[in-house]
Image 1 (cartoon, rainbow, N blue to C red):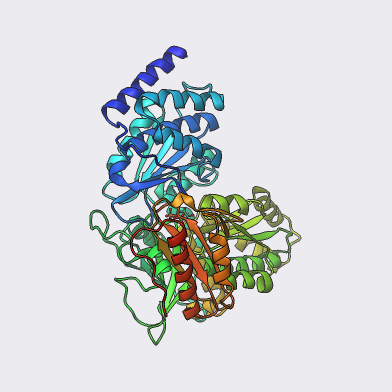
Image 2: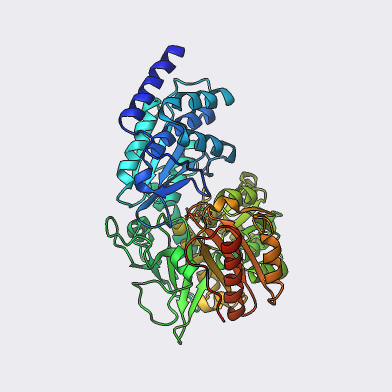
Length: 554
Ligand code: G16
């Protein structure tokens, strides 16, 4: 065993020295969703994440996923997200090891690997665990995927290359593998079949209903989400017509450019490339298709956004209703972050009467919290989210159907809920599956997008980015709603916020971009714009801003 390890380490080191030497001096850290930076700086990080994935897979005795993507970031960036056995993001306690392994010098790689092996008492070093690898459409992704494959091979793992897939597809494959296909087939075909099969079943023969029409305009962000919807459409067999826009894929340089979910949400603007006719139901996904937002232009060309908060409330309200009809006592909860619009939280609490929790930014935090409920709905305002069902909840629904003492209404609702579960990718937020779920609910309610929007009125809100010398000087607490450092910044924010009716604002360092994010909401757009700018200016002043200071509108 010791000899085997020695041999293996020799291979690991040889690969590192010859092919993937650490070329960047500065450290990189595992952020909101893994490592993310310029693609040219990532080869050695990818190789090392291949190594880490094998160690994690041996420790968990399960398949692990590695997704190469920088999601919403511009095309020259890239990144890597590690996927745990049940589709969750890499367990947080391992993030520090990922960071250590990424930053150590080549000659010390062996030491960090030994530290991990000792810390977790990994003994099965001769096992050949599977590491599932996926990549987005960025031109840099193939060579970075090769680096991951080489890392996996160097440590004796078995790489399974899925080629270009969406992030949620890779999460789905990992879950399928680790549940021995109980969750589905670990293939793209299996994924489309499961989702579209359940979707068509719930939709039935009447594709339209009331004010709902079965056509949606889809902005693929010129990325993998565009490529994959082409296959989805075949499976939908006309039950939903998905009109594709922004589907220029590899090498167009247009990934996420003036389009995609992040652009639409953060700029609050209609994307380029879609027809601007009034009242058309449109949606945008991001660069790896793990988030989605809806929107439309009204008769006056005014832009209306239905973001992750709207999707969450639509889903939670509907599931609550169906659940009540089943008469099965399961608890339902919703998880948001500080970015959730205050009006949505009021609506969930006071109208839907669904318990709501607030956690830090990052799918990992939301997913984890949602698992506490029998049925947990989680969404970030930016459109990341899904629904998770406890196994025990699914079993109770299935068992209830087997008994003969359900009324017709209870039976119909239970059957519907079970089918809806199959439309959902519970492994992680999935733009494609979320779209099918939203379309299912709108169809069932007979709603146009305007009717969906009429549930409540969003408070005007704004997102700004401030560039600072070192964004780590900003630290936060209370699910990122308050900042601890730099000294005095929170006091200044509180004092600014107090001037604006219904004002709320917070700041936090991004975990995916080299910026500080500023969020603000207030009762009028004018107040909101001013509030955001005043807070951004304070960040600039107290946290070492670089470039031009943010302007405050008069
Ligand atoms: C990732 C995370 C999300 C997070 C987003 C922005 O999304 O998965 O949970 O909301 O980054 O994070 P930050 O504000 O820290 O930059 P994606 O779609 O870019 O992978």
